[in-house]
Image (cartoon, rainbow, N blue to C red; front, side):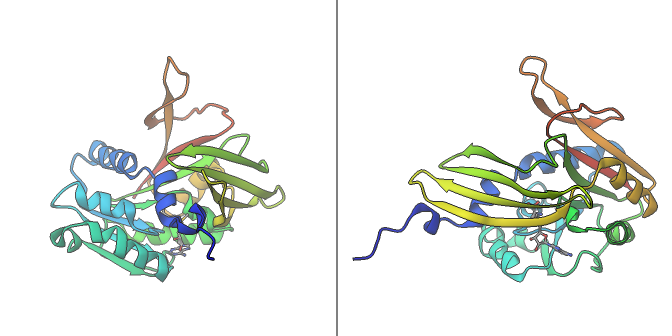
Length: 268
Ligand SMILES: C[S@@+](CC[C@H](N)C(=O)[O-])C[C@H]1O[C@@H](n2cnc3c(N)ncnc32)[C@H](O)[C@@H]1O
């Protein structure tokens, strides 16, 4: 007799990732409003670097009929999953406004976007300053003359610690595992695991080997790559709960929190 399949064997890791890691609505709210505030016009062409399943690019397409998007990722399988699942949910007209490229963000050449997004810390996988600068240079060259590169970053005094951080999601637990950290080169290996109500587990659904870059380093390298203005958008605090309020504003002073996430806005 066949054993009953576990929840872990039935689950799709990309669905779990999109449900637990990404908040594409909030991300697009932020970049759309910030671009409008800085440039006094609406952005039209968005390029999502390291796009994975192109979930963010699809959200951009849904936000307006004038919107176009290009997604860039090296991994053909992940792009195909995005086509079969995320692009498949767009109308034919919407699908006509999005293009996915299986290319390297270090060398890709595209139509000039108003905005380039590199989110979920994907650029941390560049381990050296030269490689990071090459990526920022290529992004800057690609952008329109008044274009903007949007990045996110994470840090805080728990960021270089070896620890596991579980979080409850709808129907499963998401576990962020900072498995190893080397203080000599700041390189770390992290995994995402998922655990289910039947006790089954999807171990190492995603793994990353990257460098924990600091904000001053990232800012310096962005200026070296030729960006004119680089600002850190720090999250405000809700006075009642003393938790983050989801509102990010330009700031020169942050809080020494155990863990923080912020946006970096680099203007060409
Ligand atoms: C951390 S995932 C990010 C997924 C998505 N952008 C998000 O915000 O959740 C990193 C993605 O970057 C892709 N990638 C890694 N190196 C790349 C490169 N040099 N050029 C293009 N894509 C790359 C991987 O294939 C993977 O899909």
